[in-house]
Image (cartoon, rainbow, N blue to C red; front, side):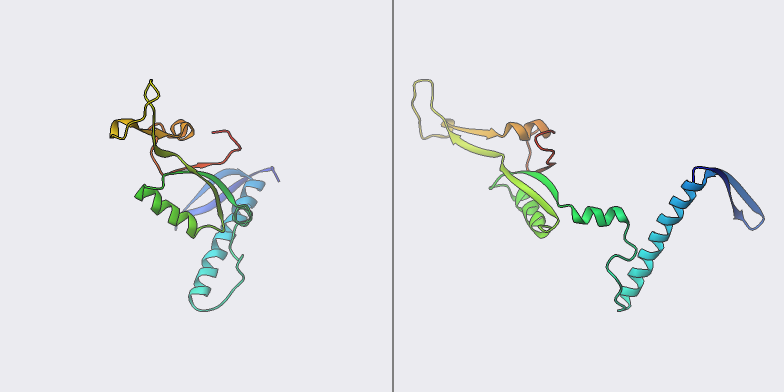
Amino acid sequence: PTSPCTVSFLTSPTTSSHFPSTVSREIHFAAHHTTHHLASINFALNSSGVKTGKNIGKAISTKTHEKVKAKFIYHSAWFCPFAHRSTIALSHHEGSVGYTWVESLGWEQRENGDGETGTGKEWWYHWKNPDLVRVNGKGMVPTLVEDLGGEF
């Protein structure tokens, strides 16, 4: 299969071109190109009301990907309207996208050095999750990170 070969085809009605290749590369190309055509045929048939098998024209890598539920860490904030939109999108894809919600922004009241806590805005601290800041330097939400088991 790794044997060298020459691929020839017409580049115009009167000119042919020749390119070096290998048998395995050409078999690989033919298989992928066939999958592409099957996907186009499947789409056309389904659009015409003809039901076909759900895997016709689907690459093996796509079928494998569909079996694996993607896992993400979702840095969010309950009060952020942009995060709300992302939450809706993630909910829509719930069957194929798994995620762990991490509340990554917030406010907390802090004591001064004397152990006192006041009620004014100067006593409130806006915090950002250190993991969020590590993967998104500005600490903006929403941020979606592939869950690599603690490695970023």
